[in-house]
Each structure stands twice: as structure tokens, then as C-alpha cells.
Amino acid sequence: MICPGCFQGIDTEGYCKKCLKNLFAGKKVAHVLPFNSPYKEDSDLYRDLTKKMSISGVQVKFSMRLKEDKLILTDKGGQYILKPIPTGQFNNLDQAPANEHLTMQLAKQLFNMDVPVNAIIYFNDASPAYLVKRFDVKADGSKFQQEDFAQIAQLSEETHGKNYKYDLSYEEIGTLIKRHISMYAFELEKFFRLILFNYIFSNGDAHVKNFSAMRTDAGDYMLTPAYDLLCTRIHSAQESDMALPLLKDRFTDAFQVQGFYTLPDFKEIGRVIGIKDSRVARIINEFNGKDESIDHLVDRSFLKDEIKVDFKSYYKDKLKRIKQF
Ligand SMILES: [Zn+2]
Image 1 (cartoon, rainbow, N blue to C red):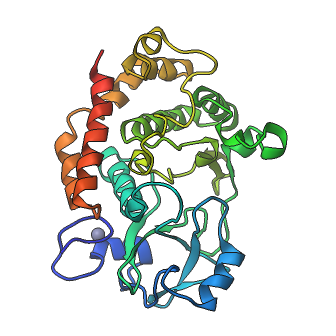
Image 2 (image 1 turned 90 degrees about the vertical axis):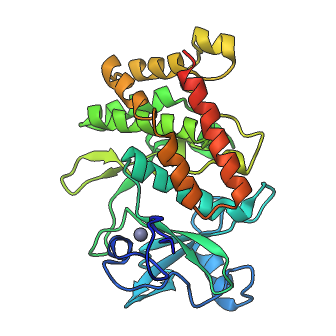
């Protein structure tokens, strides 16, 4: 059997010891919830909760907390966010929980990126959901102060119109990181790795609000762990390669020729946000030679077989573009 947290092979059903420890402080929480998904459960429970607690965004999300060794839906003191299969006009939406889980596990296990603890969990009717532990909640229940980069850049629907989430470039977010985070050298590298990861794994919706900074207990700011990572191309064939342009108001010569981002574009964004060329090259190189381990995790993921094939071909396309020059 495969652990629905980390894909590790285990003897029994459910989460492995390590995932139980990371997700639930070691409590033996089951990987199946004792109630049905919101689409099958015609109950007041969900109706009330959907009204009260859906966190902003298109997808309905539920807040959960641990009560002894059980996860319960809650409207206060949430420690986890539960994302069931979304509804809407996009393709393969039944694959969304497995897609997000796989993409987040790739970020963590193969690229050592800082991501919140996450897993697949099942409803009683066997439909899957993506479960993620909130990184902004401290052990004592209080919260870290955090702001997304739309707030930091003072972009809002009122001031910048409906499309405000897409009204900045990654270069400009880099500039904001330098301005607002004192330990920015390290955070800029994290940011650079994340935008490269998003490009390679076809996360075309990493808009301004999908990057945030939080205040640490020491009083300074750092980037939050990465969140909402998934291969959006699986759900929308027309999705653009990236939610935001890499550079502010310009394109490289290579882009003008190719019409898509290649190695020179990433070298340029790395340079303009202030990362040393040697570090840029090193981070880009982290994405080389990992095909086998990526494919291994894709194979173990909870995606349908034909979607696994798509997932692999999409990232291979992008790697080719990065290696082209
Ligand atoms: Zn595990």
C-alpha cells in the first residue's frame, strides 16, 4: 500500500508513521473521513459551513481541526484546510486533489522547497480531497501575521480593477522582496526556484496573491511556504505558461525569437532581481537529471493513468525549453 501523504510503500492502510507525526503530531488519524463529500452529503452541516467559512477564492475550501484523533469540520480554530474536488468549467477536475498533492510532494521531496505538510484524504464515499496543514497557525493557536504580495504592493480590485491579481511581473515581486525582507538574499533564491518550478511543472496560475510574506517570532519577515502549486495545464489546455510576465515591460531577445521562455529568460530574471549568475546557474541545474525520480513519484501519485502520462509529457516539454540554449 502507498501512504496517501508521502507515497512511501507501507504494510497497512493509512498514513505512515512519519506522515502521522508531521500531519497530526503522531495521533493515529484515519485517511478516510467519517462523512461524505460535500456533493454527496445533502446536509445542513456543509450548507452552514460553506456559507460561513469558505476561504476567499473560487474553490470551496473547508476548515478542519483535530479533536483527539479525529479531524472535524470547524468554523473556528482551524488547523487544516480541506479542498475537495472543485466544481466548474475546467477539465479533469476530479484529478485536482491528486494533482495538487503530487505537485506539492515533488516540490518538497525532490526540490527541497518549503511547503506546508499535506496529504490526500478520502471522504466516506471514496472521493479524494487535498488536506493541508495551515502554516500560519502556531502551536498555541495564535497566528503569524502574513500578507500576500497584492497587499504588499497595495493592489486591489478597487484600485486596479478585476484583473489586479495579474497586474505585476515576477521582477516586481522580486523588488518588493528586496524592499520588505531584511534577509532577502536567501528569500530571493527561494522565490527564483519557485517561479522556475512553476514554469517547469506548468503552474500557470501563480499570481500575485499566491506569494506571501509572514512575520516571524523574531519580528522580521520571510516568504511563507509555497502553496497552491499544481499543474494547471491538466485543467485548462489554453492556460498561459505563467500567470505573470517574468520581466517588467520587456522581453528578452530569445523570447522575441521563440515566443516562450527559455534559459536566457530565467538567467535574466535571476540577474535583475539580484541573484549572482553562479547561484542562478546552480538553481537551474537542480532541475536537471531528476526525470527518473520525478517519474517515479508521478507513477506513485493518485492521478489517473492517462493524466500521469500528460503530467510527465508537460514537464518534459518545459525542461526541453530550459535546456535548449
Ligand atoms: Zn507517509
